[in-house]
Length: 99
Image 1 (cartoon, one colour):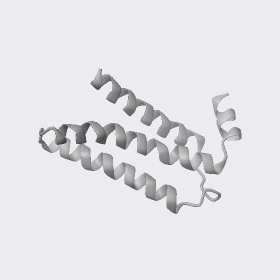
Image 2 (tube, rainbow, N blue to C red):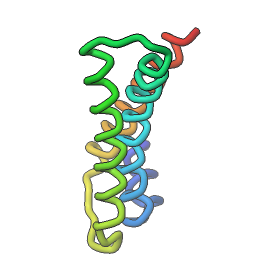
Image 3 (tube, helix red, strand yellow):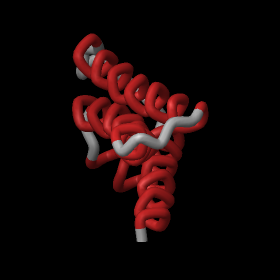
């Protein structure tokens, strides 16, 4: 039921922006807390890697979104759902670490 609604109700352009929005959410969930910690003076290799990785994910997804033609973009429903699920888990993990 979920598959039928998602595949028939979401256009190629919407799929592209959902597909590219998921890494942006993941990158922000990793990068923002790491950047905040680095700015307060905490320095460590894991924080540096999270900062670089989070910013890299955001930049790569933005670049992919701008360079890809929405009409020619195709992605399976399963892959789209996995990306959205991963973004939700990353965001949930970040929110739980803040609380």
